[in-house]
Image (cartoon, rainbow, N blue to C red; front, side):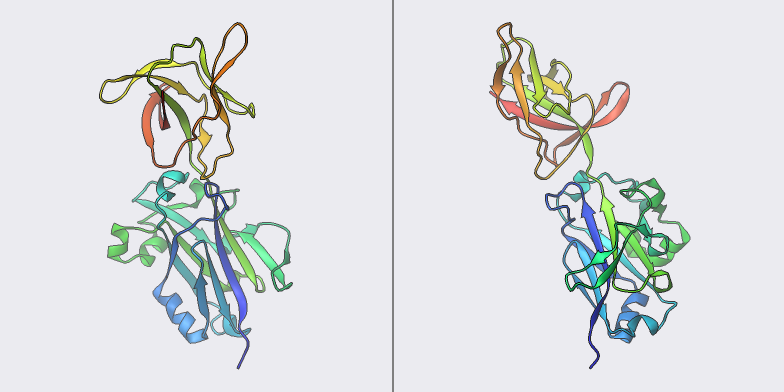
Amino acid sequence: MAAYLPLLRIEVDHGFYADGRCPGLRWVPSVDTAAWLRASGSVVRESGSALALYGTAQALAIDPAAVLAWQLHAADSDFATATDDPAQRPAELLYLDAGHAVPDVAEGPDASNAPVSRWRLHAGPTVAADDVRPLTWPLVAQALQPAQRRMPPLALLRVPLAALPPSPVVLRLQLAARATVWKYCLHGDWPEPALQVVDLADEAEFDAPVPDRLDNGRPMVAIRSRAPIALSQRSAHRFQLRSRQRSGDKVLVARLPVAAAQFLAREQIGGASRLVSEIHVHR
């Protein structure tokens, strides 16, 4: 019996998640891909963030002109709000073709010390507008059944076997974390003068506090970041709430909570509509 070898691996990374991997992914092969897997005797293994294809050394030669394709669905509860998605859903999706992959990092061995060819499925460091296609685009329209167009996948991945370098091959897809304006909402009595949010790493800056109100009309004090800040599952940011006083800054909250992926709002800031992460601090 011929030995099974790693032929292809597709990895999906994401800047939001602590380990850098995108969890909860589901890979749906096209009808032709499922038929090729059966004909070649190859097998697929999924880990939630990656797909691995195993087969014999002769598997890729059975039909060199074959094009493997998978629909990629995201199931993690944080994914939609934590992702900087360039596609306008549901009319668009990400479309990645291995025929246009670019070298990712210097080639190196895998766990078995075999040489691995590593490629990135998009030209830039993360997926961007150039990687988006409308559902009406011919190759996308052909790949989706009517029911799938009603709930389209995150991405359509296309892998022409003729375009692959010698196996094993690693193809990588990098998604960026969403960046939002962080808005600290201070509830209760804050009588100290000159409130300010300070970044101990001296990277992010925040505007001066302004009076604001909740949807129910209750007053609060709001302090917004001057620029969007990337969301993170385990943020390393350390922000403090301080009062600037003549004798020196007084620390009121030594470590403010960080923004969560779920709590997003939209506000007009500087004449533009911006996504805002509301972070509520009570006293």
